[in-house]
Every structure is written in structure tokens, then in C-alpha cells.
Image (cartoon, helix red, strand yellow):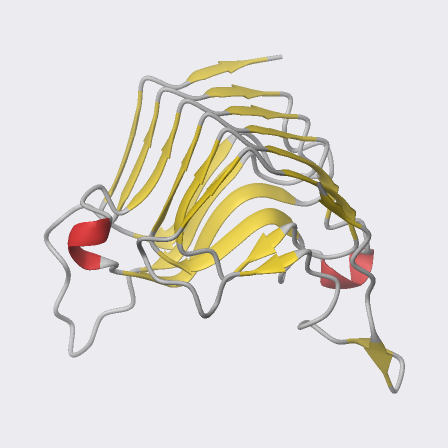
Length: 183
């Protein structure tokens, strides 16, 4: 059970490296986190996600509006990661998010950013978001999928504006399949 990470401020601005419950930046793609309850954190429940997040419960994270649209989320990674069998709900911002390259984790993540068999409910922005990925050099585009979003229950997300259940924005090489969307 991890809760209560508070935001820090400097000259009136929220510091984006504060308010996170868990930062996995130094982890490897083979890291495994299971059976966590992460809640009531002002920024992300888990930031710089790497590896696998399984059978966990994430709620009421990203509560400070100063982080909205940048780092507020249940889980945010800039490297491919797997999220499966999680209950992600009532986070004022995003649920599960891979952004800004969603860097290839190689053989450790053969399905890339793989979100499957999760229940994503009542998150303020997107239930699951794949964004600004992959970043490629010299116009060379990756040919292999870098995100696979499948077999999730995605309900009643996007209540904070023009958002919704699942999103792919400024990105390529993703497959969304067999997800169930509802109220």
C-alpha cells in the first residue's frame, strides 16, 4: 500500500519530479511489480514505468491539477511496459499512459507497450493513452508494433472534457483490439 506523495513547489510552480508514489526510472525492463495498492498521490502513482505491473489497484492519483496533461496519471512510462489484470479507476487524469517515445524495450517486451485484461473505469482524461511514439530519426519508421491494447474493460472515462476510453495521438504502430467499451 503506497499513498500520500505530496507535490513540492518552487517559486509558485509545481515541481514535476514531486508527488509520485513510485519512480521506476532505475529499474530494468524485466522488473515486476504485483499486488500493489497505490492511491491518493498528488501526481503519478507510478512514473517512468518499466517492466510489468500486474494484479494491482490504482486509484485517486494525479489529484493536483498543476500536473494535469503532463505527468498526472495512474501510470506513465516513456519506455514500453506491460500492464495486466489491474483495476485502474477514479484517477482525475489518465489511467495507463505511454508517452514521448515509448522507447523499445527489446526482447523483454515483445508486444511493446502491452495493456491487456485491465479494468479502466472513471478516469478523468483517458483510460489508456499511447502518445507521441515512437520518435524516429531521419524519417525512418519502425515496422514492428510498439503498442498492443487488447482485451480490456474500459468504461466511463473522460469526464474532464473531450477525452474518453482509449487514445492514440501523434503515434504509430499500435493495435487496439477486443476491448469492451461501456458506460
